[in-house]
Image 1: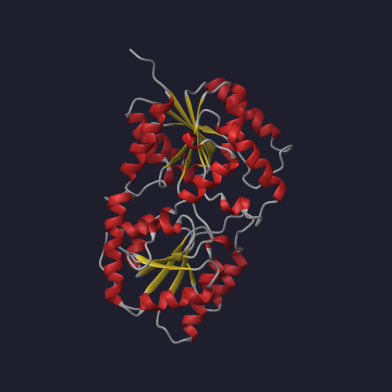
Image 2: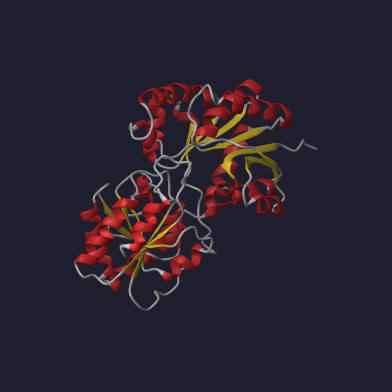
Length: 371
């Protein structure tokens, strides 16, 4: 009998693992892997353990990008990999890809999968120094090595190739997928139309432009409600502060709903979903919105345009353009039939191209390539 292969995930947050990678981990376990996840423990460890997956507490500071200060983290990762001796490590997000990739090389782990997304923010010069970007570009090819890099959109694939990662090592797998049996269409609720922006409260998610568009539409007399659904992320330098959210809500520009666990009910309660992000990998919130049959207004940016087909299941607007965003939102707010048609097309697209089953199947095939 063949020995059981061990698959180890390295993810910064247990909540992210549950929302984006748990179905994959469960499928890998069903396929015969021993599955382990190393992550920061907050509120979701019990949910992971209940799925039969062993959890290793591992703290990693997402804010710190100083290489010297990361040496203790690198040493802890090296010890972890030496102790666990995984057959495959799957690093999720850029920092785990960098530190985990180096630790894997030092520990002799040969099969490495690095899932990277939203690389444009790092290399655009907004939020990271040019020196850090050059360092990352120089390290990525060696850290991917003979393993595989997973990207979520063609732009990120091209960026990795420009960094020197061999095209044969890059795999395009479109996001985390969506459970189309759970996220299902519901009729529009009666009453004043509601637009929601479901995301972490980050400036590069287009939160500021969303608030500005909401103000414009209120000034124009458009009858609608606008809600921010998500929490600030203090570990991210682009985070909006709680004080800013409170001020926006107090001024009547938007409603601030905070973090919600019942996203299916949030989509059922709204009429339009909006994400004016500057750049994405492949936003899970938009996959869920499409699966729920809601029309989407998003930016014509990498990641967003993978899901939103302009004029078909939603509308695309330029990045950082609150005026264009307001025009697109008004068009949908004032045309119920257009909303219903676009929502139906979004549901068809989610089922055909973005189901969690398809993403899991493609990723398990990648594991088999490496073992």
